[in-house]
Length: 286
Image (cartoon, rainbow, N blue to C red; front, side):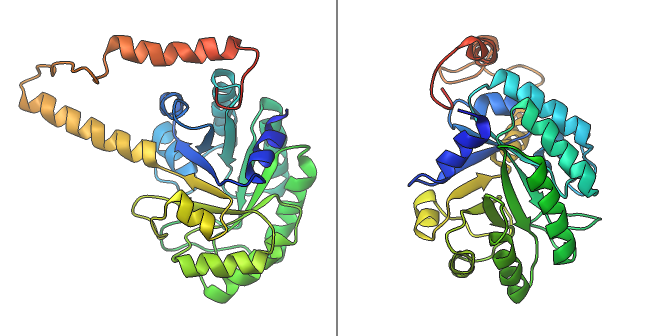
């Protein structure tokens, strides 16, 4: 089964599909132990690759190279890739989609923001005129063969959100995402407007959207849930705490407990990225 077809099948199944945001190869290696689907987060990639906020610094060749390394290590996981606004130009967006599909990406998310762009859960977002975005989306859809395409709007006004959601649902995009949804009631309204088109919900710690469980989201009609930054934020907190302890203990490393991570545990995790690639069969995420 092709990667796009595999993700599309999961999205159309009776159960909600969770995708975990990763920011580098190590976070992906950890997340792959727990989930079948990964989300290559623009927020996380901008932070890890550039040390910068997610406001438009990502260069598409860097993202393509990252996805290539991911697919080599994780041949059977779903890989949904955030391509922001398609790197501004519609022709570039189509080219990047073809590159990613050739490398084995499962899907992409294309947003309707205009530059300077922002994380979907912060203030100050601006969107392109709807027709301009739809032209870019149409080029991306015509460039893909099997890749799942998520059409995303960052509109913030209630009526405009519903207008754009309805328009996106009428395209050939596989899934609709309204980023920064602020309530369960809004999800219900969006679900009604888009009909039977699959709906994706994005939640981020400290973001605009409510904290909802997978069963709660499923009951609201959500088909896909992405978690943009759990690995990134957990890493920041854990590293900060570890270095505070190290400094407090005058540079003496802590005793490695039964559930701790040392050389052996880390190598075991990384060696799976070699052995997994040599496996010739198995379910998605095996």
